[in-house]
Image 1 (cartoon, rainbow over the protein chains, first blue to last red):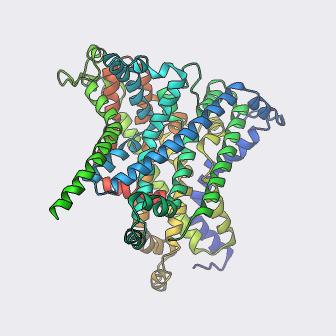
Image 2: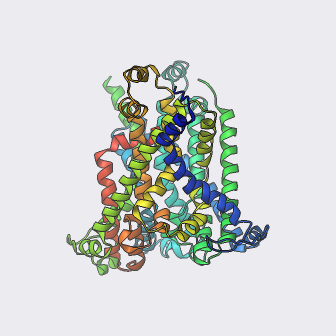
Image 3: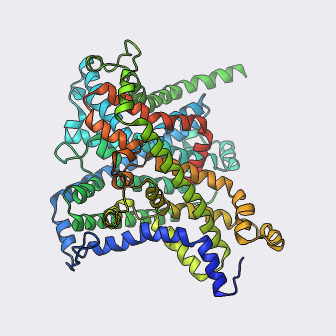
Length: 294
Length: 278
């Protein structure tokens, strides 16, 4: 521990070790956060303009925008499906690559690959798959379900977004579950085998309860990532057809930067922030209580 | 023994089939992009699933030139390394300061940093652009690296903080008695011990910054500053009907990441696992 005696010595240590990162943090996160909050109650849009207090007007505009509600509803639906499918798939993948199968490192590397590549590029890859490959396959094999691009039908385009999101994120969550499975105490697993527990029994009665910490992390990350998905949305559907697949962050982005509605756009961004924070914090605190010791 | 081995192999066949099918789902899209990147437009329209009739690099040459590939790679590289350098240097020092100086305010600073991690970038982007736009502080690669320091400092400091807490003080005492300054103690004794955390942070941040789209799309306005995700985005928007070239552009965009992955696969995977636990 360091005990600087004089104020000058304290100031020196602080300037050397902490000042620059804290200043940058304050400038990049702190100031925009404070001004962002201020923006929602005023008509302020940047320096050099007069500021008028407008009360809750921006929130009223935000809540009375039907597109905002539709986008929010769609995002909730997207989050529910993505979180469930991603985690079920990721856990299955983790079980596969920790089993006695051959070439597991090869499989693990493949499952993880989409995660390394930017969402914009992934979205374009699947745009090609949905609009060219699947149509061709559909015509070739006479499957009417595939004969028209998924991206022109709002419902199918929604599922296209879910598929690509799951495809990208499941490899990452798989790694978290692998770490959890490898960390299971060997003694417990052996004891279960000696007591005659079968594979399924071991999975349900021992592995799942002991792995709650992994589920906590993975659910937290998938929740956050699914609420905030942007890159895949803008590159795969760009909200189309007819704004029917505009998830919430793309909606806010378009509202602010295309329609120039800065105040109400920022109000929407803060509403989203509060929703995500409340859901994430309660998810983590509920699941922390469920954790058991081996 | 032999019978048992045979039994084991038999029971693994369905699992092997399922794994292979899943593997195809994860990898096949990349393969489809690759085979079509060698084809002319007509060949893609007539059959996008067939292998190319001939290997032709025209699409690659055109995409390489139109998307400004060399400059995009250079920009991505400059921005990623500069940001990484700033994050590692300043976050490790900040974390050391927060652990080793027993000030009351340091606990508060640490709590603010941790709490800030829940704020999504989307909740900050509108004021961010308005503020730094009105100060003319957008459209610079080095400023972008500074912004990445601001957005990345909290997680990196948090990870370093957890590690430094467990370093015994005795290691530093000897050096202090020998008259080393605080800065020397940090860089000569502490920073080398932090290597595993530094590696984890480096991997997570390289993947984040290299692939990031939203922040650079808001900050970098000139065409000459575009990173790989940005130039791919604008290229694809313009040449979307020229399928062969668009596919070649996607392959070009993917190549650097795949090289990085192949050369450091184990480090990347363990880095992600370490980082996710935090």
